[in-house]
Image 1 (tube, rainbow, N blue to C red):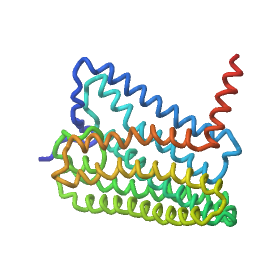
Image 2: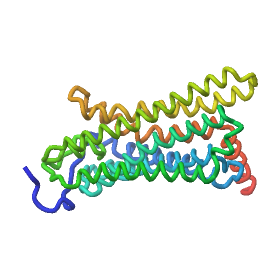
Image 3: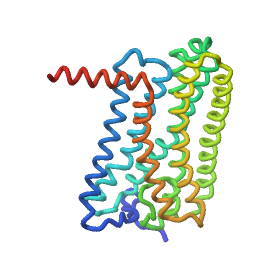
Length: 313
């Protein structure tokens, strides 16, 4: 049954947060603290890289995209979620739902693209150190960053443009956030084309990123094993180990909810938990890992913090 009126005026209802009255304010404070921590940590990484010319290298310029993307992902969730917690109102307009879904997919796909580009950068730096400067020039770096964002943007725009011709049959969405699979479930007509395109994107991003990371890290491991310089070997393994932890954590958080939407046997509560965790944990974990495990960034943050303290005394 089609809903009457303009689709722009349709108000959807997301799944209830099921918070008891006594937990509303503690949940709001916890959510606000989490969101503030995410923004602070990621902004710290961005400012540290931008303000220090010693960090204006391909590795850190590529890394700069990650905290920006993480802040975008968290911002696609928390403002609407915090409002829902405080007001206990799970209503959201259809355009706002589409916008939230767009930014969630932009965040998820961009995370894979950025980490894949960073893996390629480490592969060139460790396996071909003498050619690194010639390959990862400023112009090539700009091309890589521009192309990865532009292609990703076009893919996600097409994904959501495919939803626009459809009419809505129901206002209730059995999810905590809006994204493409949940939006398809409220459409009246056959969404086979959308489903196929969504599966194509899912396979494209995960297969390419997994293939590139596997290829680069196998070669990096071989290079490190055959390298007689123990210091260089340890540093390379530490840098790559950090990157690999972040990548595997992202894979774990993003793959399940997208597959679970296409399976009738997947528990709904697990699907909802993973859909939220993918927008919460990577934006918290990534800056902490790169901030505290990457020596150069850690030193810059500590020195900047000390200088601020001295200036206040």
